[in-house]
Length: 150
Image (cartoon, rainbow, N blue to C red):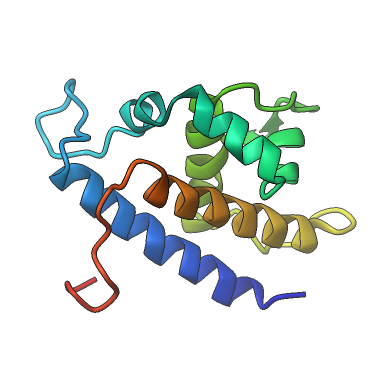
């Protein structure tokens, strides 16, 4: 198994770079005064063709077929049995962004049922693969590592 912390940190680094590039490329939430990356707008720009591409390549089988659940206020995960992701918006927001949020907010690599660590690593690797594909799919310019301070 790949080192989960190395894989997660690489994903988080590229996620940060993607948000930086999105904000400077006009992918900004219109309903906020602060500069926040608009992942819904990115998904719409990528289009359903991108989702079909991800499914066809098979680089995110677990992410799409058995997506991450959401932690609710009562500290339970929902839904109990997640349904497969069906479109590009779900892939980006309920897939890639949710995996990032779970890692950054401490919900990955904390144990759990059988094979949870392996599932966490798989979800991170697959979310990272989707993020890299998105970086290249519409030609969004991503700063090179070291070109700005993190």
